[in-house]
Length: 323
Image 1: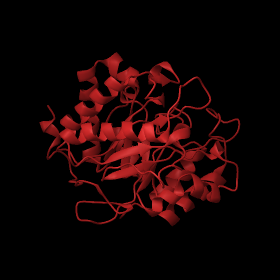
Image 2: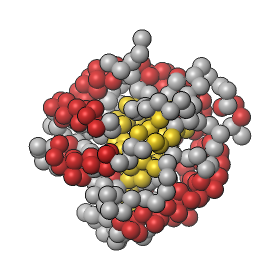
Image 3: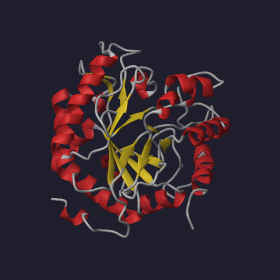
Image 4: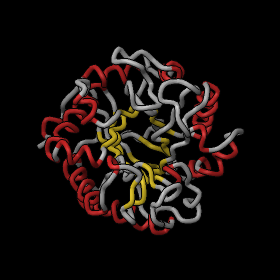
């Protein structure tokens, strides 16, 4: 099924795991992930761009990891095996480019009560468990697939989304992790907090009761007013003292720029402050979105012309490229 992945490509990236509050590679060396989010592979492929050029461009920008946003609706529309074949090809191309991969179950809402914020995010507990069992079985021997992001953005606020406490969410995540680990005991799982994956305030008192875990925040600029660092510390940054934290979405648009909306409107000042914050605390991240229309976009056309945030983050990422 995925035999072509093993030993394919130019880079043997090795399996990533958690050690204390750090990600480490197969040699035990700390690795900070600085990468890019791709739009849904189904959509990108329909546009004719799920190809090596996309992955090579991501690498040339300075990424060392890319995030695949798997929407439940796309998995059903393309049909299951065809969608997984698309993922297989993406993983092959990532491996050839020397990039790790995060697979993200890209739903938004309350999984416990099966209430979601839009049709593309509609799923069920049953479908979510089946998806992760299939991922774990299919990619258990492929270290390029570095992380399994259990659920994109949990939230119960702002809409009729039911109720879910941290303890209920924690228990559901632990069940998902146990299902994944039944097929892939070495899987590194990512757990998001509430408020559209922004806040992790409950983790300190009640962490996920499993090993090889990292936590996710999406610190878009309008989630909190300035000054940001002290609020980021209280909301998610404090977790990085004990566990790895990876911010799998962040980004910004200028006010009035194409795609500008709450909560992403900001200036380059946000980029300066959030990257400095990450560096000081050893926090990893993947930027949203390496696509020409999924806002906030990093480029404006399929020649990869950078947008405002694209210019800032491309310069930032490229300083880490090793000659």
